[in-house]
Length: 333
Image 1 (cartoon, rainbow, N blue to C red):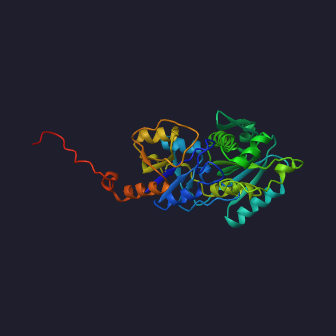
Image 2: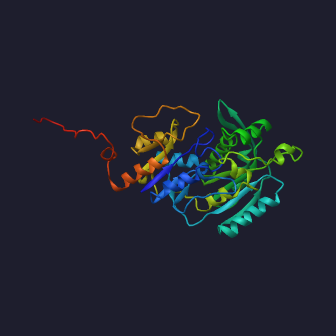
Image 3: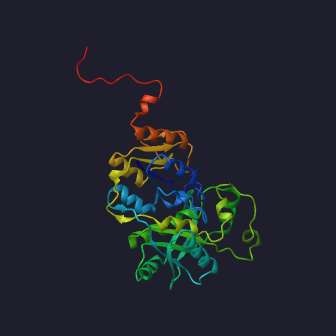
């Protein structure tokens, strides 16, 4: 049994729309199947990542290509990770890499960019987006080295009031959109697993933000207790599948999604007849019309029941009441 869990970034998902608060539901879903494919937004929680051994960490655009049937995925025992960062190299970055090396057993090297990557985040029409400047230079420099997966660790410029409002009031994660754009651009260009983690860039003279120590929404808390925001992507990329032929869209048994959002992975599953389970409790700021063919459930607990029914070959209709009359085709008396 192989499934996919998607929680798109930057659209204010109630569950999984913040700092790794999709970890618990992903672990629950993973307990029902042999393999669960997730993308970084589901499990990234700054210095925390609780993904299980039977999860595959696949960047969003790579996941889209996989579900459309344009690529396959090969499982790996481990990847050599190249971490790229803007100058100057910070001590906490080296310490975070060293910590991942001694705890995960990962092979990681650091590359300081000759031309800094500039990322600017913002909110437009209620969704997170932004600009990525200089990513082509990053790709050109990285191509000179041998590695299997790339981790990008660079600052994101963000309006002060937007940042402060997010910490205090929650809402759309303002960093998420531009991070997704960055990993997509770089991952597709290098054709390798990619993920981004932000470098903290608050002005030390801004005492309100620099020493921010208020109690926040639990879904935001992982950011407040982290130092480098980096460990989540190093853990994910350590065993992220590479592009190959081993696993294809034909192996996927289901996909689970928040309610009200329909994008490329949904359209790909519809095309290939892969059942899609839509969770009503996980609302977003979108209101896309969802096809009647989707299986609608109230919450992730109910989604687990649907998956278990699929796994043992029980029709959903047979365990719901009232049960419909048996369909009879052709002439009969």
